[in-house]
Length: 82
Image 1 (tube, rainbow, N blue to C red):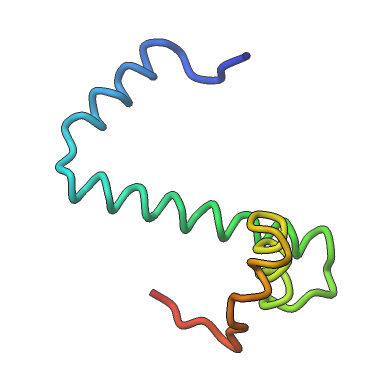
Image 2 (image 1 turned 180 degrees about the horizontal axis):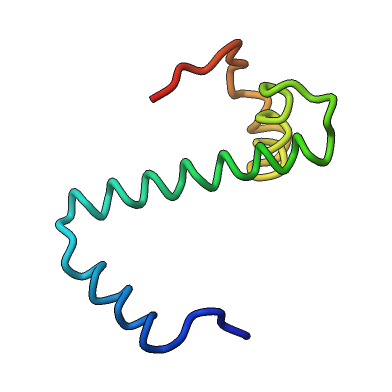
């Protein structure tokens, strides 16, 4: 697999991650998860410009979790910002 990060940069990233406290690691993980969710929804909106935010969110849930499980997630009229 091709990498876009040099070995030196990768080692620096690992060293920086090792200096984080458990709480900081959880915060980073939560932020990365939120970023991935946002990017997936934005990509769905680009593929299907007519979708509302909620429709795009539901489409991502169907793709990730499958239709049966995604159907159990309540529809959110408007999500509040964090």
